[in-house]
Length: 211
Image (cartoon, rainbow, N blue to C red; front, side, top):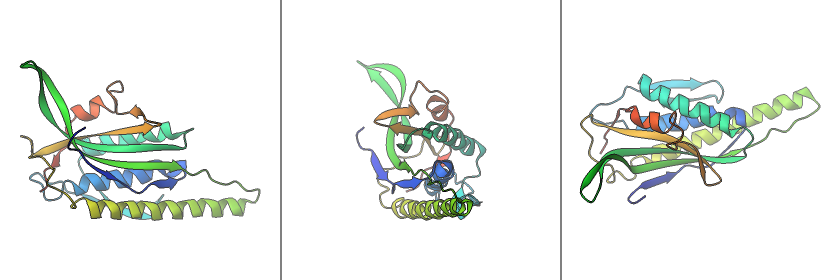
């Protein structure tokens, strides 16, 4: 894709039980940051994660929240049995597709992508229950620290370059979709998976333009 601004977040090395919550915090933060200052601003709320012992901002729009929740649930399920994958949040506009002057409908024009690589960290198992509890606590502490680092990365980069952001559509908002890639193959987000790809893109997410 041409003229796509890409941001690669720090890799998360977390236990599979932390994947969904960690990705949720990062993706919600990206969505909120891209809405601040828009013509139809969201009203983000502060959410505390018991699992990660940290606070992050998330949108209060039910459509956006449910779309992210559906994508993250499928992503977490697909992580089972895998060791490494990458979540991608893509913002796009719609343009008219034509061949030889004939209009063939709309096409998605991606202008920004946020990539979140994830490496599954298997927990160590001990014969002593106390050691297992310490291992679980260590995994939680590590996951929390890594997510906080990723959130700082997002906040630091979101205003780094804004000249690539297109003018808002009639709704004054951007659309987005979430995809999951493993070994170079798209597991969710492809047109063949309408729940994540087609449905997410057909359901407009009101992400206001920020310049």
